[in-house]
Amino acid sequence: MKIWIRFLVGSVIGVILGVWLPEAGGDSAQLFGAVAAFVINIGRYLLFPLLFFGITIGVYELVQQRAMLRIYLKMIGLIVATSAAMILLGALGVLFLSPARVPPIFQEAPLLTLPTLSDLLFRVFPRNLFLIFAEDGNFLLPVAVFGILLGVVFGREQRVSEPLAQVFDSACRVFYRLVSYLIEVLAIGMIAISAAFVFELRAITDFDIFSQLIIVLLFTVGVIAFVIFPLILYFVTDRENPYLWLYAMLIPVISAVFSRDAYFALPALTRVGKENLGVPRSVGSSVFPLAAVLAKGGTGLVTAASFILILRSYTALEITFAQVTWVMVATFGISFILGSVPGSGVLVALSLLSSAYGRGMEEVFLILMPIVPILISIAVFLDVVTAGFIGYLVAFSERMTKRVDHLDYI
Image (cartoon, rainbow, N blue to C red; front, side, top):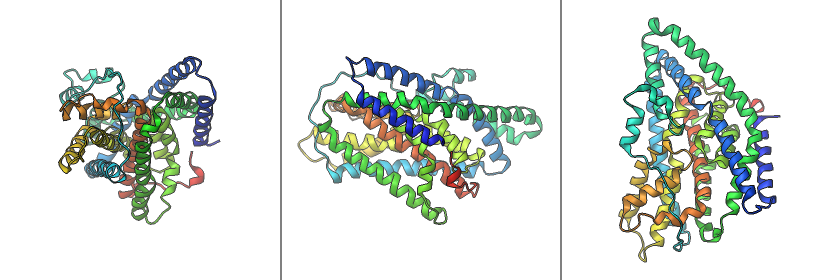
């Protein structure tokens, strides 16, 4: 049985259990929530070594091919372009489709650890290099930067570094195989993850208040993922069927929707990138992780649209062009520091926007707390799809992809 079918079947079983089982005072929800958290930890268990050895060897190979600078410039350009475009589309969607205003709903303020730009810079370049390996697993950029630096040295100093490069190459292959075995087992864990997600949805009591916002977000995200991205790929990839690309992405997409954790979906994205999309290791191991960390256009879209709705709900007047512009620019800047919160990016971004906006609205984002699980799920789905889109487009633009028949997809 193909792996995507296992993931789909596991998710469907979990959804059925989440709908059918009684909560029994919250015991079922707590049980599945605890198991889901454990499964997500297992899914991210090998991510750091996979990324470290993979990105080092990937950069090493790109340096040898004299393609590193070109590929990274394309990646950065696509990250910036997709983030800006999606935030703009999110703002336009909520302005033109005009979902109903949200009445004030008082919620308890969650305790959030909000990273500052200086905090993140010191985590990328700590005083002691080995501290990057003591991270809590929520920030991949420090390890990625070190891997890039090593890969460049390996490529430029081959006579000295060749023995160590061979060790890294072997380690990369070993961890890739370990991750491949782990992904096959995680399909069972999707039962707990999807059931826990459904229990969180069942706990939402004021869904009707937010239903129009959710519909607008789903419509906007759907247009991007199922219309805009496929159209771009259709014209770029010699008129090939672009929906095969989405079919190839089913495993990381299912993982992203139910886990709401971009890093949990990243190992699956790395594997389908190679085995379904034909993206070579040199590009996949270099681009997919950095895109997962930096390309947060999906989170930016959801954040910008949600915050504009909040502003409309808290003012009797129509919001101005200047306010909308401020929201989009601020969201665009914030999106690049959300790689350190892979499972709560929307909540953190809304909190940062509210604090930056001020005017007595520092905690106004709390009115959206009941639907935060849905907002994060939508955002992570689009973030993962965007990372896959960027990685595949960069590899194809360099004519480095290998054609894989859709019947051979994992």
